[in-house]
Length: 253
Image (cartoon, rainbow, N blue to C red; front, side, top):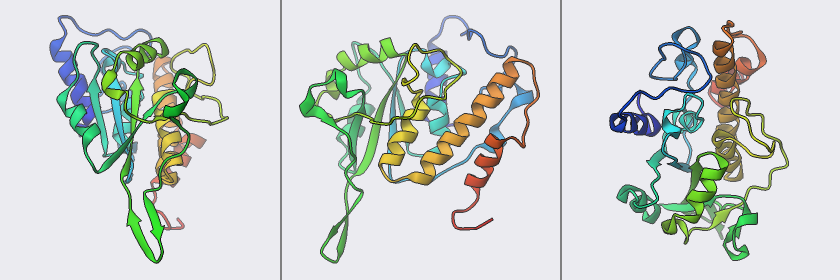
């Protein structure tokens, strides 16, 4: 199964003059579906969750090529995930069309401390609104995530004028990042998948948020065990949690 991030990866590879060599991580051939070595493949564990909310990834140049990239996990879980490559001098017309699509209410997700206060919001408009006895459906939230290292994301934010009209959603979570595949100087810097889960929770998409969190835990488990040439414990807490979330909601199983 291909999705927006895998298609972007394919297009990026087609433009490369030499093979991309990931730093660190497991060596050898990788599964095209999950980017892990075949012995640690997790394609059979991939969940799929229907949501009203969508995610739009604007990805720095080599992000789609990194095996540790977690934007890929978002696209695995959420069908309404789009992915576009970022360039300073041009913008994909399809991205502009999506941002202007009347079905969506886009939110640019970025720390509010770097933005003029009048652009900052901390809540998501409800998808449904009660008007007397009538329930009206509002626009679907579209979370625009800058998928990059922190220095790259700040550059992308400053040099993307087509995003300047969007409200900036500033996450107020007090939790700390559990991401263990790349180093950050601050433990309140979340990976892209964690950010998406927080956004989904704000939009009331609790099951999707929990599933994405569990899927990231399982991916981290497989990735690190592959790197250390260790087997995967399919009965550990992360795998059990993901299996429980993949059961039909309300099944009681």
